[in-house]
Length: 203
Image (cartoon, rainbow, N blue to C red; front, side):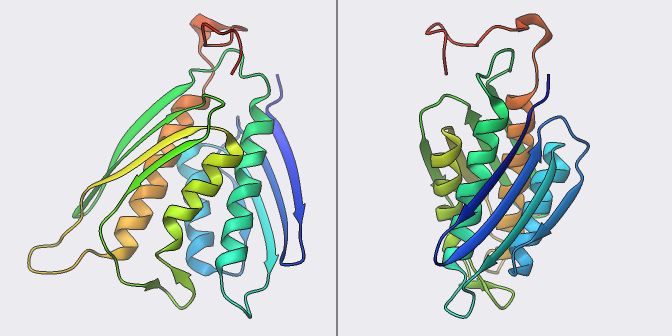
């Protein structure tokens, strides 16, 4: 069974191409024009075990918002399409990921019902020159909406002794935790082969 998808999303603000293979080996080809965002999308490929291509050209002369939002929407749509009818998947996944002083928990249900809960502390406004930390929540909301999933992301611990949270660690740990949760949820369950994991018979 092939679980691949290609999504092209073109607006007056952005042009996005996403290709994904859920049964890949973590290979990535990422280019959005936002360096830290590229680094985060690489985490999804590597820690999720997905082969992932993301090429985005956006109106960065305005700001990074449209580029990041539309990329997240296209990525979610690619996940949804690649999952097909979701027969035989585990459906649920969770992961708790430490990154130095930061601890993040992510839980996902490939439910067909978009719902996102996101909790993180106040962070420095930017990571690098163009990644606004306020966009992290919106990335998860946009991704969850178009992937049609329930997603909870909670930063359980972040503060360094005597200092403020390291925004880089807080955001990167989120992407790693979500990636590991998606890896578990999208995995095929040998005990449930060909069966949609829902009493409704559809997700």
